[in-house]
Image 1 (cartoon, rainbow, N blue to C red):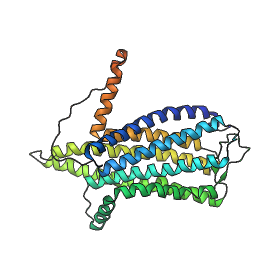
Image 2: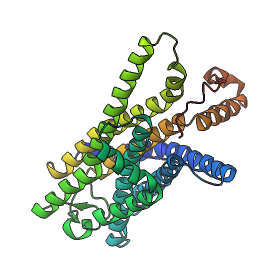
Image 3: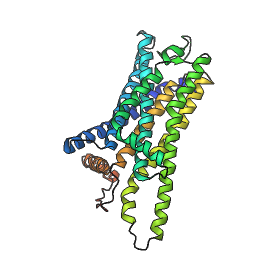
Image 4: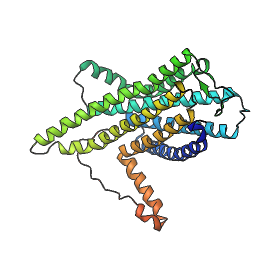
Length: 327
């Protein structure tokens, strides 16, 4: 038996816990964004991207857990194999959407924080940022069209397999292997490269800014950095969480393509952990969201005096300056 087969129930339970957290954090983001929309009658580009990301995260998590639960209940796969395969296809297209929407968000923040010296690149940035809603709608369509070949190129897992999961599709020949590699590059590596590029741009910008602050005798740059710092920390944290996820996800793909082990449950578990932590980082990045979350958490603990030691101090931040990053 394989490591994953032995721990099937454990993976299912941990994914369940992560599913609860993912749904809570992403529902929180979605409801806070709706509240903002009601107040301002519009969304900023950043809010549009974050709302789309929270919806994709939530839908992905629900489908993942539904599939895992169904395969636990329906061990003999009495339901149509195609039903399960379509569910997996939708999960992978949503995963593609999550990866690219996260990378689009870091791209958006990097354009707001860093002025690129290359004029042609700046023009491309401006064109993309003018059509944020269109990009957010195009990403899931690209995800679906990238995943559709799964049904023809990949084949159902061998029925005699000890750890068979209903509807699992595996690469068993060269076209299957090629497709798996192309999907991996498109859904993980390319958005990862874009995020690292944005991360480097922001880090360089931060370094230059800190040098200017040291050189400045009147400290005039300090307020601006104070307002930007939260966004910088959030963006860098998003990239770190993404890169950690990418490493473990590549391991899951290695298990599938090289060892021929069905690592789909591991893949779902890793993605669930990623969507939980990335949603928490997103909430931290929006000061209003973070303050409401902390306040709600503390109010909840008030009901249980014995847990008062777990309270988090709520800081009353004064607006530092008119120089703020619009996000």
